Length: 141
Length: 141
DNA sequence: ACCATATGTGTAATAACATTACGCACGCAA
DNA sequence: TTGCGTGCGTAATGTTATTACACATATGGT
Ligand SMILES: [Zn+2]
Ligand SMILES: [Zn+2]
Ligand SMILES: [Zn+2]
Ligand SMILES: [Zn+2]
Image (cartoon, rainbow over all chains, first blue to last red; front, side):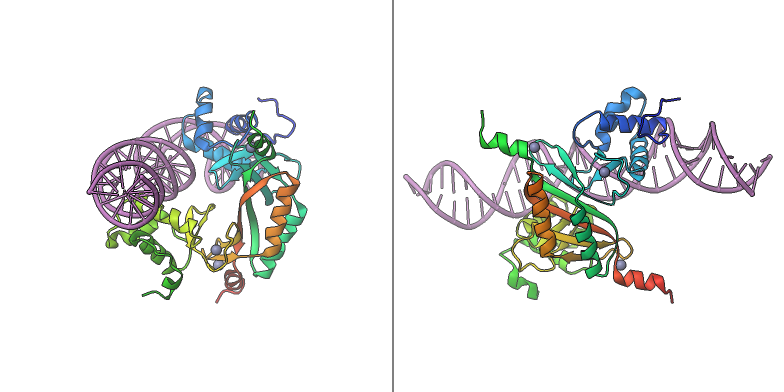
């Protein structure tokens, strides 16, 4: 039915809608924001959003930001392992930068080994101010 | 009463109650769980809990676990900087291990510098299985 | 004493986020 | 055909967090 976009893996209609809403906007969005945006497309209930998000996260196309209760489209869906990614979240402008740092990933694995912890997923969210916002707030006007 | 009092900084009654409830139990607790436990002590509204938690977090006595929407007493309140701590959260038994790893902290700072990000707080939550649970599930009985 | 400020308290109402339960539909393979 | 896995739609409910308002107490400056 739908022309499948290059990176889509046969998404269903609802999954396509949610993914489209996430990629069509900068910054993270909450489930209820997504719902509001997609009411025009026929979505009516939170569960429709949450089900689509769950699948998209499974597919590695979307990430959940725990400290914001919000969701973002993955910045580099080509890479396979999204279990260790970091997010730099600007508290000023709200933009999120997805960071894939190999040393950080291996460092976290080492920490887990040190503590005899069987690591399944690493949640790393850096809060602060992005470079742009720091620049504009440093020299206003 | 509590030997923990030694490190208290003149907590108010509500703050003392919430802190006591957090230290008196293993594992993280949600705000509403705390409220239920403290009804007998006269607390009635969520806001009373959230206000106390906010202050306790400011004081470095309590941490918020973003991926659980729950709170834990700090494991080592003596150390000053709690902006970069990691938590190993066992998805099996629910216990949380607070990890202070200096290499991890400096690594995160480096990542921030690389991305021109002014870092204020690092949220690191490791999800998986703790050593005890891995052992018991490996050899049942 | 008077005032302003900062901090804490108590209550009610509401907002924001997320899940459970139920029934139906479709594609696919035993 | 039957059973199974997956997705859909709706309603209801559960969980987490905040806003608004009014009052109380301590502190420091005039
Ligand atoms: Zn990603
Ligand atoms: Zn910014
Ligand atoms: Zn701590
Ligand atoms: Zn465990």
